[in-house]
Every structure is written in C-alpha cells, then in structure tokens.
Picture 1 (cartoon, rainbow, N blue to C red):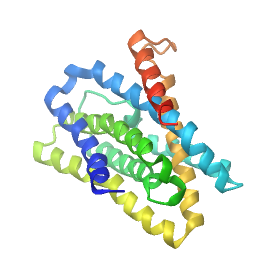
Picture 2 (picture 1 turned 90 degrees about the vertical axis):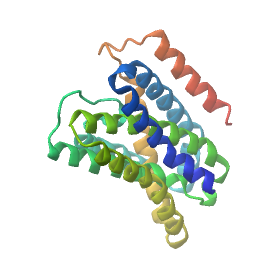
Picture 3 (picture 1 turned 120 degrees about the vertical axis):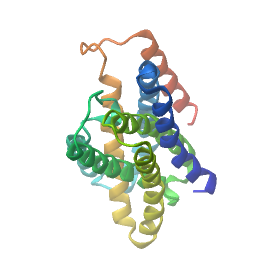
Picture 4 (picture 1 turned 180 degrees about the horizontal axis):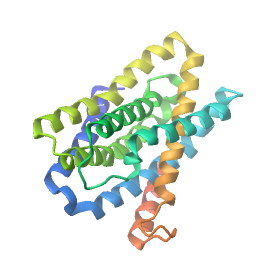
Length: 234
C-alpha cells in the first residue's frame, strides 16, 4: 500500500467520528444510508474479487471462511453489533465500553489483513480498500456516538477514535510481514477476514428498521448503487 492508501484507511473512521460529534443524533437516517451503501459495496467486492482468490489458493478455504463468519458472531457479543448499526442513546458502563473497544479493535484488525500488498490481491487492491474504508465511516460514527452518550470527555473520545483509526493500517503492516514469513498462515487469515466481511455485509443488507424485512426506497437505491459501483471494478 502507498502512503495515500494508509491515509485514506485511517481518515475514514475519523470522518465518521467527527460527523458524530458534529451532528450527534440529528443525521441518523443518513448514517443508515451510508451503512447500507458500504454493506452492499463490501458484499459485492467480497463475492466478485475475494471469493475467487481465496478459494483458488486453498482446498480448505471454505472452512476458514466459515471460521471467520463465526468469529464475527463472537465479536458481536462484545460490540453488540455496533459495526452494522446497533447502538443506543443511553449511558453505557465502563465494562460495556471496554468490551466494545476490544471487539471493534479485533474486527478492524481483521479488516486490514486482506489489504496487504501480497501478490494474490494486487489487482483488486483499490476496490477492496475503498470498500473497507467506506465501511469504516459508520464504525467511527457509532463508536463516537456511544462514547458521547456515555459522557466521556471530548479529549478521551478523540484519543479513542484516533487509536481506533490506527488499527486497520497497523494490521496491513502486520500482514505484509506475515505474507513474506508464512504464506499459508497469511492465506488462512485472509479467508477468515473474508468470512467476517460476509457476515457483517449480509447482516447490514438483510436488517431493516421495521424488523419485517421491508426496505424503504432510499435503502434499496443505495444498496443497488453500492453493488453497481462494485460491478464497475471488474
């Protein structure tokens, strides 16, 4: 990855976090639309680019993808689904906030693994980078919202947001070294990350505000837009 790529990956959650500080609960509908767009784009990129690569490199890829899928379910026990739009407007205790930060950090670390400069992902690097970066915007928004509602001081909120924004770029650097030291383990972690993408993106897509699997036209439009833009990367 180039320096500008790292800056983009780091800037995305910062953008979401600053938006939460600026708008707080006033722009929740727009937040949901960005989330839906990112889910559709990430889901499409996963199917179009990552699945073919992952399954071409290992006979056991399906097992590793499945493992990543269930790891994400475990992480959601810590985050309460904040990475795909579930957060509350009431004060949370320190135990919850710590679990949230731990779960989001592990999730973000998995996000960064496939963005390594390994040759198996060179051709699809930028489409995946954009998909993950867009996904990071609502993550940063939700994280800061929870911290604000929990009455943390602004300096503490900014510090946590900054540290969170560094996780995915650090994961890329780690994966770069791992891909050179242990190609097999690197491939396994990429497959697990793909499983995590699959879970998060499908959860975003199939959830609805009504709980009745009914989607408004705005959500349908941004989902189709996200998938359509992903198709342009072929």
